[in-house]
Image 1 (cartoon, helix red, strand yellow):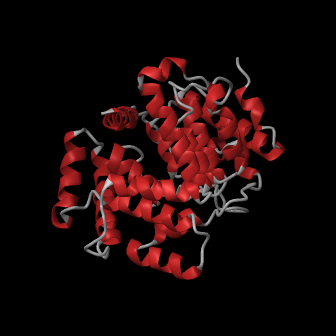
Image 2: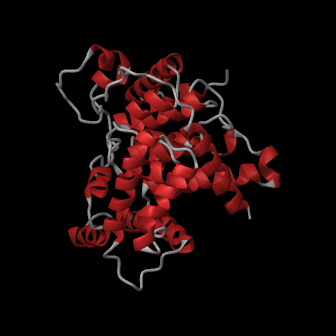
Image 3: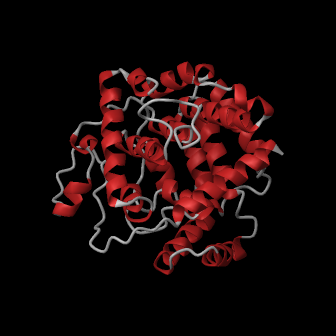
Length: 317
């Protein structure tokens, strides 16, 4: 019951955030800052929307290309086979399997999946201009999942088993996900009132210092309005968004059409518009003033990562 309640709360939060729409007629797609060293020309609006982190060299030490390869795959079964044949570290393979099964478990009836997704988000009030992206994302998911062997276990129990295996193998993304899940479940349990940041901050700081963008994305869910953490980088929707953008700065694939945006859109109705994650946040989630604060915080977090002094982000206010 606790797990079901958590999923319901997360889904409701995502759906609510998705429809805080701010009209911004002259917005243009912001160049993706994870493309290191980009020298693209941008409009003045785009220049103003970039964070201080955008012009800096990413400091990622983790496998920054992992999310791009996963996003680009048209056949997740073949992608996993290639990973197994390539001799990747042992934690990477169960992580990829967990992500793929989690994505594909929803496609139980491929013929109905696309129209069902379209109907679901139309009924929920998704912007009409975004419905083509919903349709495309759903179609891409059907294609990516079509070749999974018939005997593959498509269950949350199997997903959790694989994530646990990846964490036991030392994969930082899987460890971050486990920490996030443990903290959120505890917060919803009778023991939630006694949970403090001292119970998990040291582990969180070690994961942040890994500079693994996928791990930082997982931890962003602990930085929102109900965060048990205190400091300049936790406790608000702006903080949660800033950590997500930092993950992009560090190399996570946050582009339009990425697995990240596809899953946000199909599972929560968020970021279904054109453009990358930054552009979607700017156009649909925050007012211009609030988004400016998000980017300022993003820059502070990024600078702390560069200096190695991430502990300063969580000094109590």
